[in-house]
Length: 59
Length: 193
Image (cartoon, rainbow over all chains, first blue to last red; front, side, top):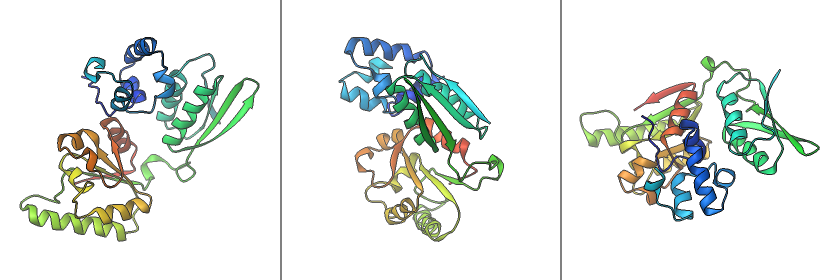
C-alpha cells in the first residue's frame, strides 16, 4: 500500500499516487498559491512548514 | 531519432510527469518536450537537470521546445554494461559479530573507497548507516573526500528523523525512499552492506 513520506517531493508523491494531485489542487485553491508550479521538487514537509499546514491532515 | 512529448495546453505537473515517463523508458533517444508557458519550461528543465540530462531550449513563437539528452557519459551505453556503482550502507558497522571490529572495518572500507579507481556514483545510508554521515561519525573525512570526487552521498530522511539526527547531517543530502529506489534501480551495479 502506498504511503506518503514527509520527505518525498510533490512530484514523487503524484507519480506514485496520481489521485493526490487533486488534493494539492484543493490546497492551492484555499491558499491562493500554485504548489504544483512552484514547489513540485520540494519535499512535502518543507511545503507544510512554509504554508503552516498540518502534514497529517494532508496525508 | 527522438521522442516528442507534446505538453502544450497542459498545466503543471503534467508536462513534467509526461516527460519523466519517457525518461523512465530509458530508450536513450533524445527527448523533446513542447511547452507553452514559462512555468512548465522551468520545471521541465529542472527535471532534466535532476535526472542527469543535458538540455537546450529552442523558442518557437510562444512555445518552447526543450531538447534533452542523457548525460554524454551514459549515452549509447547499454544498462547492463554501465560501470556506475551504488553502495547501500545499512549499518555503521561492517559485518556482524562484534561492533568494535565492525566500526574498524567500516572505516577501512570507506578509506579504501577513497583510494580506489572504481566508478562509485552513489553512497546511500539507511537505518543505522546514517550514523556515518552525521555529527560524531569517525568517517566524515572519507565521506567528504568521496563527495568532492563527485560521489553523491545520500542519507535517508526517515532514518535521520528516527535517530533524531536530521539537524546533525554533516555530509551529502537528505533523501527519501522514492529516490533510494530510483537510484538503486538505475545503478549499473549495487553493493549492500
